[in-house]
Each structure stands twice: as structure tokens, then as C-alpha cells.
Image 1: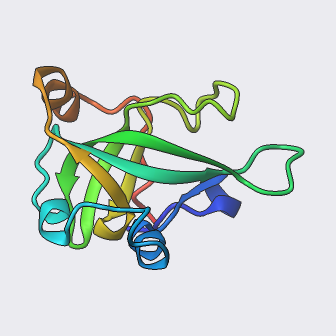
Image 2 (image 1 turned 60 degrees about the vertical axis):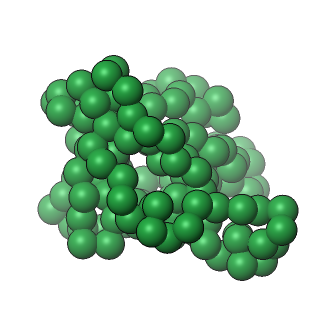
Length: 131
């Protein structure tokens, strides 16, 4: 499954493990075992780089994703936040499905009844899985 690309999709995911290696004292992340044990409905926080028209550099936002399913190297999730750096649109907004790897996860939270139901429901904005 292809990963998000800033040129194609207008956004991409930052590598949380890389940020942790660069600043292990100030940028802490859950251990890899914790990041590999998430279940549908659990929350994962990821760092998004979002292209903003007229800005030279992408906007960076930390947002929660609801885990929908496991993949070979991570998960497919659904955006649980609304990005504040871009106007509402139909391509990247709350409910957007996206793939992510263990290395992208910077924080986790257990799911609740609402997030578990959301993980099982049809996704409002599906990820193009064709590649």
C-alpha cells in the first residue's frame, strides 16, 4: 500500500522514530512493542506535514488517528481531528482514511466505545489502495 506523498496527496507523515533519535530526552515516544499492539478503535497520534497554498514550507500538525486495521508494517486508520492549518475540503479532513507505519506513531491512547464503533463503520473518505 502506498504511503501518503506531499506532491500527490498534499500531505505526508513525519517519522516519529527519527525525531526521537534526534532528541531522545525532549521527544519521547511509546516503545515499539506498545506501538505494535494497537487494536481497532485505539488512537495513535501522528505528525502530519500539510502543504498550504502560498507557504514555502508545509504546516506541521500533530493529530489523532483511530486505528481501523493492522497491516504488515503498521495500520490503516482514520483521521479523528480536523487540521487547523487548511480550510475544510473533501480530500483531507476528519474521517480521511490513511496508512501509517509503527515509526510514525508518537503517542497512543486506548479506544473507547465511540472510537471502536468508528473503526467498524464505513470510512467517509477512503484511502486509494490501488497504489
